[in-house]
Figure 1 (cartoon, rainbow, N blue to C red):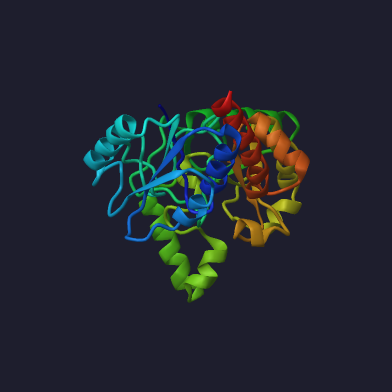
Figure 2 (cartoon, rainbow, N blue to C red; figure 1 turned 90 degrees about the vertical axis):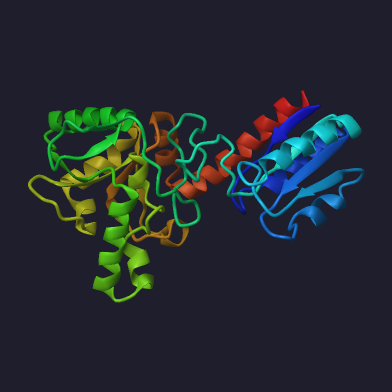
Length: 304
């Protein structure tokens, strides 16, 4: 019996993936669903998929409160039903790695393309490793090691072309982001207005250690005007060479959830950065297409 664990947040595409896997394999499959409440939201989706056994493990999470019940369920299914595949669909809150650091998975294809926004948040305890101070011009800031090295290379290249960039804000802890959000809420008078300008704690890319806010020389002001400066134009045209993207693009506020921020760059690695820049699309849209390619890859390897 092969065990496949299909995890993700609501809307990530778990049910779609499982249904397609069922269609392609044509083998005996048991689905073990884990939900927190007393209602199974997906059982109806699978019960119409033919001779598929759908079992439920409710009132807790397989990674913690019902761990023993989960183990017993797997052993029972193996001995009593002996399916070709056991598909485990845990609650979106499960930390299957056993880590207490991140709500999001701590690894992806290359470790740089986590999607962090209001719908995909990081836990209060998450701290990226390894962190280090960036050795560049500007305010002393930290980033994850790979992002820091790439930033230093980008600053050096810009300097060679007569452009001096300055760092303003890099890694921020959950608690620091909370203070910034509370301050912005008081200043704007409402959370609705604050949400347009600053991320809530847990929803900031800065907590990943992969983001940096930039400004012109001898400036710490973050403004849309940065995009029209020689420095901002250089960043937009060249940052992808070093694995960065301008994260919040103009005209895509409804997709990203944030106002245009030409100063905010995010490290995703050179390959992804080049592809995103060439598409002219925001990170969320790029990942949607990439996820479909990943589905095909997973389905191919599960059925061959």
